[in-house]
Length: 460
Image (cartoon, rainbow, N blue to C red; front, top):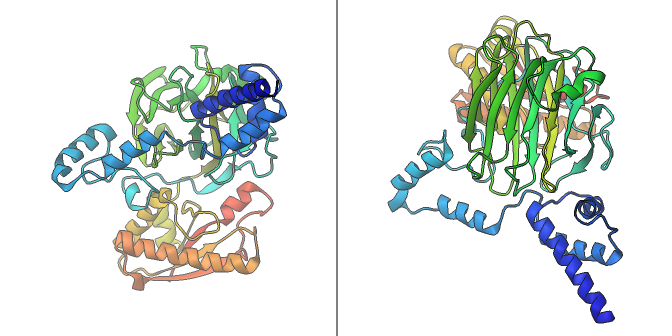
Protein backbone atom coordinates (compact mmCIF):
# COMPACT_ATOMS: atom_id res chain seq x y z
CA UNK A 1 0.00 0.00 0.00
CA UNK A 2 2.85 2.37 0.81
CA UNK A 3 4.35 1.75 -2.63
CA UNK A 4 0.95 2.38 -4.22
CA UNK A 5 0.49 5.61 -2.24
CA UNK A 6 3.88 6.87 -3.36
CA UNK A 7 3.06 6.04 -6.97
CA UNK A 8 -0.21 7.97 -6.74
CA UNK A 9 1.57 11.01 -5.26
CA UNK A 10 4.21 10.91 -8.00
CA UNK A 11 1.52 10.69 -10.69
CA UNK A 12 -0.37 13.65 -9.24
CA UNK A 13 2.82 15.69 -8.96
CA UNK A 14 3.67 14.87 -12.59
CA UNK A 15 0.23 16.05 -13.68
CA UNK A 16 0.69 19.39 -11.96
CA UNK A 17 4.23 19.75 -13.26
CA UNK A 18 2.98 19.24 -16.82
CA UNK A 19 0.20 21.76 -16.30
CA UNK A 20 2.54 24.36 -14.89
CA UNK A 21 5.07 23.82 -17.67
CA UNK A 22 2.31 24.58 -20.15
CA UNK A 23 0.89 27.69 -18.53
CA UNK A 24 4.16 28.59 -16.76
CA UNK A 25 2.31 30.48 -14.08
CA UNK A 26 4.35 31.88 -11.20
CA UNK A 27 2.00 33.97 -9.11
CA UNK A 28 3.08 34.74 -5.57
CA UNK A 29 0.06 32.96 -4.07
CA UNK A 30 0.73 29.34 -5.09
CA UNK A 31 -1.99 27.85 -2.91
CA UNK A 32 -4.70 29.70 -4.82
CA UNK A 33 -3.17 28.71 -8.16
CA UNK A 34 -3.14 25.03 -7.17
CA UNK A 35 -6.81 25.23 -6.22
CA UNK A 36 -7.67 26.89 -9.51
CA UNK A 37 -5.76 24.31 -11.54
CA UNK A 38 -7.37 21.47 -9.57
CA UNK A 39 -10.87 22.82 -10.19
CA UNK A 40 -10.20 23.28 -13.91
CA UNK A 41 -8.69 19.86 -14.44
CA UNK A 42 -10.19 17.33 -12.07
CA UNK A 43 -12.68 19.10 -9.79
CA UNK A 44 -11.15 17.34 -6.85
CA UNK A 45 -9.54 18.39 -3.62
CA UNK A 46 -5.78 18.94 -3.52
CA UNK A 47 -4.32 16.92 -0.67
CA UNK A 48 -1.28 17.68 1.42
CA UNK A 49 1.02 15.48 -0.65
CA UNK A 50 0.24 17.47 -3.79
CA UNK A 51 0.89 20.74 -1.94
CA UNK A 52 4.35 19.53 -1.01
CA UNK A 53 4.99 18.29 -4.52
CA UNK A 54 3.93 21.61 -6.00
CA UNK A 55 6.24 23.50 -3.63
CA UNK A 56 9.15 21.50 -5.03
CA UNK A 57 8.05 21.89 -8.63
CA UNK A 58 7.60 25.67 -8.47
CA UNK A 59 11.28 26.21 -7.65
CA UNK A 60 12.16 25.01 -11.13
CA UNK A 61 9.52 27.01 -12.96
CA UNK A 62 11.10 30.45 -12.77
CA UNK A 63 8.97 33.51 -13.32
CA UNK A 64 5.50 33.64 -14.77
CA UNK A 65 6.47 34.47 -18.31
CA UNK A 66 9.56 32.32 -18.74
CA UNK A 67 9.85 30.85 -22.21
CA UNK A 68 11.34 27.46 -23.03
CA UNK A 69 15.11 27.15 -22.75
CA UNK A 70 15.34 26.32 -26.42
CA UNK A 71 13.67 29.60 -27.34
CA UNK A 72 16.10 31.48 -25.14
CA UNK A 73 19.08 29.78 -26.75
CA UNK A 74 17.70 30.51 -30.21
CA UNK A 75 17.33 34.18 -29.30
CA UNK A 76 20.86 34.30 -27.89
CA UNK A 77 22.30 32.58 -30.97
CA UNK A 78 20.47 35.01 -33.19
CA UNK A 79 21.88 37.96 -31.26
CA UNK A 80 25.43 36.54 -31.28
CA UNK A 81 25.74 36.05 -35.02
CA UNK A 82 29.28 36.37 -36.35
CA UNK A 83 30.60 39.51 -38.05
CA UNK A 84 30.92 37.61 -41.35
CA UNK A 85 27.15 37.11 -41.41
CA UNK A 86 26.26 40.60 -40.21
CA UNK A 87 24.63 41.73 -43.44
CA UNK A 88 22.59 38.58 -43.78
CA UNK A 89 21.53 38.74 -40.15
CA UNK A 90 20.52 42.38 -40.52
CA UNK A 91 18.35 41.51 -43.49
CA UNK A 92 16.70 38.65 -41.63
CA UNK A 93 16.18 40.81 -38.56
CA UNK A 94 14.43 43.43 -40.65
CA UNK A 95 12.03 40.80 -41.97
CA UNK A 96 11.47 39.13 -38.62
CA UNK A 97 11.21 42.27 -36.52
CA UNK A 98 8.95 44.36 -38.73
CA UNK A 99 9.81 47.98 -37.96
CA UNK A 100 13.39 47.32 -36.80
CA UNK A 101 16.22 48.07 -39.21
CA UNK A 102 19.75 46.71 -39.55
CA UNK A 103 20.96 49.57 -37.32
CA UNK A 104 18.47 48.71 -34.57
CA UNK A 105 19.70 46.03 -32.15
CA UNK A 106 17.36 43.16 -31.33
CA UNK A 107 15.12 43.82 -28.34
CA UNK A 108 16.93 41.69 -25.82
CA UNK A 109 17.58 42.69 -22.24
CA UNK A 110 16.29 45.83 -20.61
CA UNK A 111 15.23 48.63 -22.99
CA UNK A 112 17.06 51.96 -22.88
CA UNK A 113 16.28 55.53 -23.87
CA UNK A 114 18.23 54.95 -27.07
CA UNK A 115 16.10 51.94 -27.99
CA UNK A 116 13.02 54.23 -27.77
CA UNK A 117 14.42 56.77 -30.23
CA UNK A 118 11.29 56.59 -32.43
CA UNK A 119 8.84 56.83 -29.52
CA UNK A 120 6.98 60.14 -29.67
CA UNK A 121 4.18 59.52 -27.16
CA UNK A 122 3.62 62.39 -24.71
CA UNK A 123 1.23 61.75 -21.81
CA UNK A 124 -1.47 64.23 -20.83
CA UNK A 125 -0.62 67.13 -18.59
CA UNK A 126 -2.52 66.08 -15.45
CA UNK A 127 -3.19 62.58 -14.11
CA UNK A 128 -6.91 62.30 -13.32
CA UNK A 129 -7.24 58.53 -12.81
CA UNK A 130 -4.69 55.92 -11.82
CA UNK A 131 -4.72 52.36 -10.55
CA UNK A 132 -1.90 50.20 -9.23
CA UNK A 133 -4.07 47.99 -6.95
CA UNK A 134 -1.90 48.93 -3.96
CA UNK A 135 -4.99 49.35 -1.79
CA UNK A 136 -6.30 45.87 -2.61
CA UNK A 137 -5.36 42.59 -0.97
CA UNK A 138 -3.92 39.79 -3.07
CA UNK A 139 -6.71 37.34 -3.87
CA UNK A 140 -9.48 39.98 -3.82
CA UNK A 141 -11.30 41.58 -6.71
CA UNK A 142 -10.30 45.30 -6.67
CA UNK A 143 -12.68 47.48 -4.68
CA UNK A 144 -12.93 50.28 -7.25
CA UNK A 145 -13.74 48.03 -10.21
CA UNK A 146 -16.81 46.18 -11.44
CA UNK A 147 -17.30 43.07 -13.58
CA UNK A 148 -19.81 40.48 -14.71
CA UNK A 149 -17.11 37.81 -14.52
CA UNK A 150 -14.47 37.12 -11.90
CA UNK A 151 -10.92 38.20 -11.27
CA UNK A 152 -8.39 38.76 -8.54
CA UNK A 153 -5.39 40.84 -7.61
CA UNK A 154 -2.11 38.95 -7.85
CA UNK A 155 1.61 39.58 -7.77
CA UNK A 156 3.89 38.26 -10.49
CA UNK A 157 7.48 37.31 -9.83
CA UNK A 158 9.92 39.49 -11.74
CA UNK A 159 7.53 42.47 -12.02
CA UNK A 160 6.78 45.43 -9.77
CA UNK A 161 3.55 45.92 -7.89
CA UNK A 162 0.22 44.15 -8.24
CA UNK A 163 -1.83 43.01 -11.22
CA UNK A 164 -5.49 42.33 -11.91
CA UNK A 165 -5.84 38.84 -13.37
CA UNK A 166 -8.92 38.90 -15.61
CA UNK A 167 -11.36 36.06 -15.28
CA UNK A 168 -12.94 34.49 -18.36
CA UNK A 169 -15.88 35.71 -20.40
CA UNK A 170 -16.48 39.16 -19.03
CA UNK A 171 -16.03 42.92 -18.90
CA UNK A 172 -13.87 44.69 -16.31
CA UNK A 173 -14.09 48.43 -15.78
CA UNK A 174 -12.76 51.03 -13.31
CA UNK A 175 -15.77 52.78 -11.79
CA UNK A 176 -13.72 55.90 -11.06
CA UNK A 177 -13.34 56.85 -14.75
CA UNK A 178 -16.49 58.85 -15.55
CA UNK A 179 -15.39 61.50 -18.06
CA UNK A 180 -12.90 61.69 -20.92
CA UNK A 181 -12.19 64.99 -22.73
CA UNK A 182 -11.22 65.44 -26.37
CA UNK A 183 -7.54 65.37 -25.39
CA UNK A 184 -6.40 62.56 -23.10
CA UNK A 185 -3.96 59.68 -22.82
CA UNK A 186 -4.55 56.16 -21.50
CA UNK A 187 -1.65 53.93 -20.43
CA UNK A 188 -1.58 50.46 -18.91
CA UNK A 189 0.65 47.41 -18.67
CA UNK A 190 -0.63 44.22 -20.29
CA UNK A 191 0.61 40.70 -19.68
CA UNK A 192 -0.40 37.19 -20.60
CA UNK A 193 0.64 33.72 -19.63
CA UNK A 194 3.23 32.23 -21.95
CA UNK A 195 2.38 29.35 -24.29
CA UNK A 196 -0.78 31.33 -24.98
CA UNK A 197 -3.35 29.58 -27.16
CA UNK A 198 -4.25 31.20 -30.46
CA UNK A 199 -7.84 30.05 -29.82
CA UNK A 200 -8.27 32.20 -26.74
CA UNK A 201 -10.17 35.37 -27.62
CA UNK A 202 -8.66 38.81 -28.06
CA UNK A 203 -7.91 41.15 -25.21
CA UNK A 204 -10.12 44.17 -25.81
CA UNK A 205 -9.56 47.73 -24.63
CA UNK A 206 -12.76 49.78 -24.77
CA UNK A 207 -13.23 53.56 -24.85
CA UNK A 208 -16.91 54.41 -25.08
CA UNK A 209 -19.96 56.44 -24.10
CA UNK A 210 -22.43 54.77 -21.75
CA UNK A 211 -25.57 56.16 -20.14
CA UNK A 212 -25.42 54.01 -17.01
CA UNK A 213 -22.13 52.19 -16.60
CA UNK A 214 -23.38 49.79 -13.93
CA UNK A 215 -26.19 48.71 -16.25
CA UNK A 216 -24.71 49.05 -19.73
CA UNK A 217 -21.12 47.84 -19.32
CA UNK A 218 -21.99 44.24 -20.26
CA UNK A 219 -22.69 45.35 -23.84
CA UNK A 220 -18.94 45.60 -24.32
CA UNK A 221 -18.17 41.91 -23.94
CA UNK A 222 -17.40 42.15 -27.64
CA UNK A 223 -18.40 44.44 -30.48
CA UNK A 224 -21.11 42.39 -32.20
CA UNK A 225 -22.77 44.98 -34.41
CA UNK A 226 -25.13 46.30 -31.75
CA UNK A 227 -25.55 50.06 -31.87
CA UNK A 228 -23.15 51.29 -29.21
CA UNK A 229 -21.14 54.48 -28.98
CA UNK A 230 -17.41 54.01 -28.74
CA UNK A 231 -14.44 51.98 -29.91
CA UNK A 232 -12.80 48.68 -29.12
CA UNK A 233 -9.16 47.82 -29.78
CA UNK A 234 -8.37 44.11 -30.07
CA UNK A 235 -4.97 42.64 -29.15
CA UNK A 236 -3.64 39.10 -28.97
CA UNK A 237 -0.30 37.65 -27.79
CA UNK A 238 0.19 35.67 -31.00
CA UNK A 239 -0.47 36.54 -34.61
CA UNK A 240 -2.37 34.51 -37.18
CA UNK A 241 0.70 32.44 -37.99
CA UNK A 242 1.11 31.39 -34.38
CA UNK A 243 4.60 32.91 -34.08
CA UNK A 244 5.94 34.75 -31.08
CA UNK A 245 4.98 38.37 -30.72
CA UNK A 246 1.79 40.34 -30.33
CA UNK A 247 -0.82 41.31 -32.89
CA UNK A 248 -3.18 44.26 -32.99
CA UNK A 249 -6.08 42.90 -34.98
CA UNK A 250 -8.86 45.44 -35.40
CA UNK A 251 -10.35 48.68 -34.28
CA UNK A 252 -14.13 48.61 -34.05
CA UNK A 253 -15.50 52.16 -33.95
CA UNK A 254 -18.72 54.09 -34.32
CA UNK A 255 -17.12 56.73 -36.52
CA UNK A 256 -19.24 57.77 -39.51
CA UNK A 257 -16.49 56.79 -41.95
CA UNK A 258 -15.73 53.32 -40.62
CA UNK A 259 -17.75 51.00 -38.44
CA UNK A 260 -14.95 48.45 -38.63
CA UNK A 261 -11.38 49.52 -39.36
CA UNK A 262 -9.37 46.46 -40.30
CA UNK A 263 -5.79 47.31 -39.48
CA UNK A 264 -4.22 44.01 -38.55
CA UNK A 265 -0.56 44.34 -37.64
CA UNK A 266 1.95 41.95 -36.17
CA UNK A 267 5.07 43.39 -34.61
CA UNK A 268 7.91 42.73 -32.17
CA UNK A 269 6.47 43.54 -28.78
CA UNK A 270 8.59 41.87 -26.15
CA UNK A 271 11.81 43.43 -24.97
CA UNK A 272 13.10 40.27 -23.30
CA UNK A 273 12.59 36.68 -24.35
CA UNK A 274 11.33 35.68 -20.89
CA UNK A 275 8.68 38.37 -20.35
CA UNK A 276 5.27 38.55 -21.99
CA UNK A 277 4.75 42.06 -20.61
CA UNK A 278 4.11 45.15 -22.71
CA UNK A 279 3.02 48.72 -22.12
CA UNK A 280 0.06 49.99 -24.14
CA UNK A 281 -0.21 53.76 -24.68
CA UNK A 282 -3.26 55.35 -26.31
CA UNK A 283 -3.35 59.04 -27.22
CA UNK A 284 -6.49 60.89 -28.26
CA UNK A 285 -6.35 64.34 -29.83
CA UNK A 286 -9.94 65.16 -30.81
CA UNK A 287 -10.62 62.69 -33.65
CA UNK A 288 -7.07 61.40 -33.90
CA UNK A 289 -5.90 58.13 -32.37
CA UNK A 290 -2.29 57.14 -31.82
CA UNK A 291 -1.59 53.79 -30.23
CA UNK A 292 1.73 52.31 -29.15
CA UNK A 293 2.83 48.96 -27.75
CA UNK A 294 6.09 49.59 -25.95
CA UNK A 295 7.99 51.84 -28.39
CA UNK A 296 6.18 50.57 -31.51
CA UNK A 297 3.58 52.92 -33.00
CA UNK A 298 0.81 50.57 -34.07
CA UNK A 299 -1.68 53.07 -35.46
CA UNK A 300 -1.93 56.76 -36.22
CA UNK A 301 -5.47 57.33 -37.47
CA UNK A 302 -6.79 60.88 -37.99
CA UNK A 303 -10.52 60.05 -37.72
CA UNK A 304 -10.82 57.16 -35.28
CA UNK A 305 -12.78 58.98 -32.56
CA UNK A 306 -16.31 60.14 -33.30
CA UNK A 307 -16.73 63.87 -32.50
CA UNK A 308 -20.39 63.22 -31.62
CA UNK A 309 -19.58 60.60 -28.98
CA UNK A 310 -19.21 61.75 -25.37
CA UNK A 311 -16.59 59.28 -24.18
CA UNK A 312 -16.92 58.58 -20.45
CA UNK A 313 -16.06 54.90 -20.01
CA UNK A 314 -13.00 52.64 -20.13
CA UNK A 315 -13.15 48.86 -19.89
CA UNK A 316 -11.26 45.67 -20.70
CA UNK A 317 -12.77 42.41 -21.85
CA UNK A 318 -12.16 39.02 -23.37
CA UNK A 319 -14.06 35.84 -24.13
CA UNK A 320 -13.45 32.29 -25.43
CA UNK A 321 -10.69 31.52 -22.94
CA UNK A 322 -8.75 28.28 -23.11
CA UNK A 323 -8.35 26.77 -19.64
CA UNK A 324 -4.83 27.93 -18.71
CA UNK A 325 -4.70 31.28 -20.51
CA UNK A 326 -5.02 34.55 -18.63
CA UNK A 327 -4.62 38.26 -19.27
CA UNK A 328 -3.29 40.64 -16.61
CA UNK A 329 -3.39 44.45 -16.41
CA UNK A 330 -1.58 46.89 -14.15
CA UNK A 331 -0.52 50.52 -13.72
CA UNK A 332 -3.50 52.09 -15.44
CA UNK A 333 -3.12 55.83 -15.89
CA UNK A 334 -5.40 58.43 -17.49
CA UNK A 335 -4.09 61.95 -18.02
CA UNK A 336 -5.86 64.91 -19.62
CA UNK A 337 -4.76 68.01 -21.49
CA UNK A 338 -2.31 68.63 -24.29
CA UNK A 339 1.01 69.81 -22.81
CA UNK A 340 2.37 72.96 -24.48
CA UNK A 341 6.03 72.69 -23.63
CA UNK A 342 7.22 75.58 -25.75
CA UNK A 343 4.68 78.11 -24.51
CA UNK A 344 4.92 77.21 -20.86
CA UNK A 345 8.70 77.03 -20.65
CA UNK A 346 9.58 79.99 -22.85
CA UNK A 347 6.62 82.33 -22.30
CA UNK A 348 5.50 81.41 -18.79
CA UNK A 349 8.96 80.40 -17.62
CA UNK A 350 7.98 77.07 -16.08
CA UNK A 351 7.00 73.62 -17.33
CA UNK A 352 6.07 70.66 -15.14
CA UNK A 353 5.62 67.09 -16.32
CA UNK A 354 4.62 63.75 -14.83
CA UNK A 355 5.72 62.06 -18.07
CA UNK A 356 9.33 61.49 -17.02
CA UNK A 357 9.12 58.18 -15.18
CA UNK A 358 11.63 56.40 -12.99
CA UNK A 359 12.09 52.92 -11.60
CA UNK A 360 10.75 52.52 -8.06
CA UNK A 361 13.05 54.17 -5.48
CA UNK A 362 15.57 54.81 -8.22
CA UNK A 363 16.92 57.58 -10.43
CA UNK A 364 16.95 55.27 -13.44
CA UNK A 365 14.78 56.87 -16.15
CA UNK A 366 12.24 54.56 -17.77
CA UNK A 367 12.60 54.44 -21.58
CA UNK A 368 8.97 55.45 -22.19
CA UNK A 369 10.02 58.93 -20.98
CA UNK A 370 11.74 59.45 -24.33
CA UNK A 371 8.91 61.40 -25.99
CA UNK A 372 8.78 64.01 -23.21
CA UNK A 373 12.56 64.38 -23.03
CA UNK A 374 12.73 64.78 -26.80
CA UNK A 375 10.10 67.52 -26.68
CA UNK A 376 11.97 69.42 -23.96
CA UNK A 377 15.27 69.01 -25.78
CA UNK A 378 13.63 70.42 -28.92
CA UNK A 379 12.58 73.56 -27.07
CA UNK A 380 16.05 74.02 -25.62
CA UNK A 381 17.66 73.48 -29.03
CA UNK A 382 15.41 76.09 -30.64
CA UNK A 383 16.14 78.55 -27.83
CA UNK A 384 19.88 78.21 -27.46
CA UNK A 385 20.24 81.12 -25.02
CA UNK A 386 17.79 79.69 -22.49
CA UNK A 387 19.08 78.11 -19.30
CA UNK A 388 16.86 76.03 -17.04
CA UNK A 389 16.84 74.58 -13.57
CA UNK A 390 15.60 71.00 -13.36
CA UNK A 391 13.77 70.29 -10.10
CA UNK A 392 12.74 66.82 -8.97
CA UNK A 393 9.71 66.11 -6.77
CA UNK A 394 8.46 62.93 -5.08
CA UNK A 395 5.38 61.74 -3.24
CA UNK A 396 5.46 61.30 0.54
CA UNK A 397 5.96 57.52 0.65
CA UNK A 398 9.07 56.64 2.62
CA UNK A 399 11.38 58.80 4.71
CA UNK A 400 11.45 62.54 4.04
CA UNK A 401 15.25 62.66 3.94
CA UNK A 402 15.38 59.74 1.49
CA UNK A 403 12.81 61.40 -0.76
CA UNK A 404 14.82 64.62 -0.79
CA UNK A 405 17.99 62.77 -1.79
CA UNK A 406 16.09 60.77 -4.43
CA UNK A 407 14.57 63.91 -5.99
CA UNK A 408 18.04 65.44 -6.35
CA UNK A 409 19.39 62.28 -7.98
CA UNK A 410 16.47 62.17 -10.39
CA UNK A 411 16.94 65.77 -11.50
CA UNK A 412 20.62 65.03 -12.09
CA UNK A 413 19.65 61.95 -14.12
CA UNK A 414 17.40 64.11 -16.33
CA UNK A 415 20.26 66.55 -16.86
CA UNK A 416 22.59 63.74 -17.88
CA UNK A 417 20.02 62.30 -20.29
CA UNK A 418 19.46 65.68 -21.98
CA UNK A 419 23.20 66.15 -22.35
CA UNK A 420 24.16 62.63 -23.38
CA UNK A 421 21.19 61.53 -25.49
CA UNK A 422 20.01 64.87 -26.93
CA UNK A 423 23.18 66.97 -27.12
CA UNK A 424 22.09 69.77 -24.78
CA UNK A 425 25.03 71.67 -23.26
CA UNK A 426 25.20 70.67 -19.59
CA UNK A 427 26.32 74.19 -18.72
CA UNK A 428 22.79 75.38 -19.51
CA UNK A 429 21.26 73.01 -16.97
CA UNK A 430 21.18 73.29 -13.19
CA UNK A 431 19.56 70.74 -10.89
CA UNK A 432 17.77 70.69 -7.57
CA UNK A 433 15.35 68.50 -5.65
CA UNK A 434 12.47 69.30 -3.32
CA UNK A 435 11.51 65.79 -2.29
CA UNK A 436 7.97 65.73 -0.89
CA UNK A 437 8.06 69.35 0.34
CA UNK A 438 5.96 70.92 -2.46
CA UNK A 439 3.11 68.54 -3.36
CA UNK A 440 0.92 69.26 -6.37
CA UNK A 441 -1.88 67.02 -5.07
CA UNK A 442 -2.93 64.90 -2.12
CA UNK A 443 -0.60 62.14 -1.05
CA UNK A 444 -3.57 60.09 0.10
CA UNK A 445 -4.71 59.09 -3.40
CA UNK A 446 -3.01 57.23 -6.23
CA UNK A 447 -3.75 60.10 -8.62
CA UNK A 448 -2.36 62.68 -6.19
CA UNK A 449 0.84 60.72 -5.73
CA UNK A 450 1.23 60.38 -9.51
CA UNK A 451 0.97 64.17 -9.90
CA UNK A 452 3.45 64.71 -7.07
CA UNK A 453 6.06 62.53 -8.78
CA UNK A 454 7.02 65.17 -11.30
CA UNK A 455 9.93 67.03 -12.82
CA UNK A 456 9.85 70.82 -13.22
CA UNK A 457 11.83 72.92 -15.68
CA UNK A 458 12.22 76.53 -14.59
CA UNK A 459 13.65 79.15 -16.93
CA UNK A 460 16.57 81.07 -15.37
